[in-house]
Length: 544
Image 1: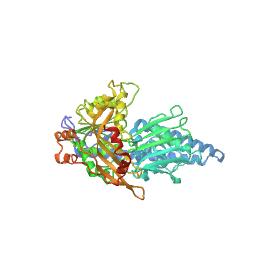
Image 2 (image 1 turned 120 degrees about the vertical axis):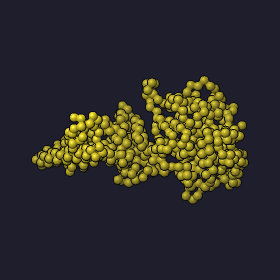
Image 3 (image 1 turned 60 degrees about the horizontal axis):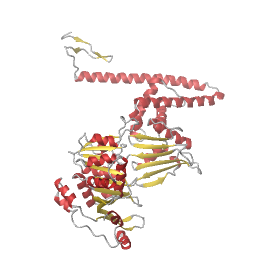
Image 4 (image 1 turned 180 degrees about the vertical axis):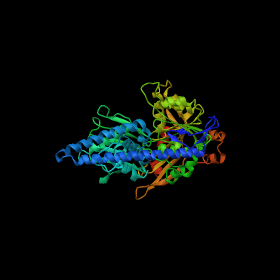
């Protein structure tokens, strides 16, 4: 063989004569030839499959023509049963072999397109013939819609063009018998009125809900009437009878994760903050102050935190921890040094990875920044511990105001089972957290930073803070929009200023926030309220 020639056969293909040595290596031309032969053989195989499928289809059509009139109703029911069984088989096949594509297809039509060749191959390989379809492509389209389609929800999402972040299905209306659908886009809520964007009936809505649960590999029925389903581009909460009353459901709440491209400049342009306020947030994050971004549900806390992280330089290691993946930092900042982790809950404590356990493990991963999508339980104890061990910590928190978020954190630490008394916990929070940013959705549907406070101390059961920025309402326009702007109402404490200097912040930037605060206009609503109450009530309550 040494130095001789022979035909080289790979995967059943015979290549032209190849010079053989002790170690056979294929040239680039030989590899191209092999790839071309494979492609031609694949085309030939598919062509033969399609011919066989056509022949089988002709036989089925001839068979249908011979069915007596009195048996056609039975045959229609038989066809319906065949379709249902085929749908279930293919759904099981996708769940077992293509689960990522199946789950991703629920809210992303681009991903859904990947299902077409998979299902078409399944049909051709098994010569599946269902009467009433012109060809396998028509059958494939019906199956994709049946398995991954969301009925009118698909069209609502498509028309929203990425602006929709919430969709709610309120089940059957007991008066109109229609299935009510609402959605939120760009901060405004709407009811769907168009006839072509409606469910056919309650059964149709339940069928879509069951599909969502099945494709998310969740059980959902009378014995388990509540399900929470995670998808790559969103999450869904499902509720049915016997819990769902007032029409019987289904109640479906979609939370769609936006393709987040918002940057700080977009928040400035949209009125969420002004340039001075952004400079303060940027400085705080970049030079090592710890902070919370707080507000009610739907106030845009997570969006604000995600956009603000652009302030972190690429040479700092960021660890993001979330209950449910939502911020998608690695998609937004692919150039940054980021790792992301998500909780996995289990009754078995060895397999249970909640935020508390992720935080404990994070201390071994040497992050410069520990970012939390949200802290809502005993993980607050571990988060505060991380903030006191030299890590830079930022997270979101549900709260009605900046000052009241301190009490919420206290309650979470107490839930951890801490033996510290309440005042000690309050002092610990004041030592760990420097800045609290409160954001809310105003009645004119604009999400604004309402206030920024510096947490200075905690004494006699109350947090002592310094209000640095505040959105001041100065009036309302005829269309209901607010007149007003952000004012710098306080100056940075000496302790925080010294910290920033030693972390490398430019002195000329820090000086902007050490100057005397701005005076509010006499006509501002804040001054009008002060005339009645003699000063800032919140500062009276929280500052001795």
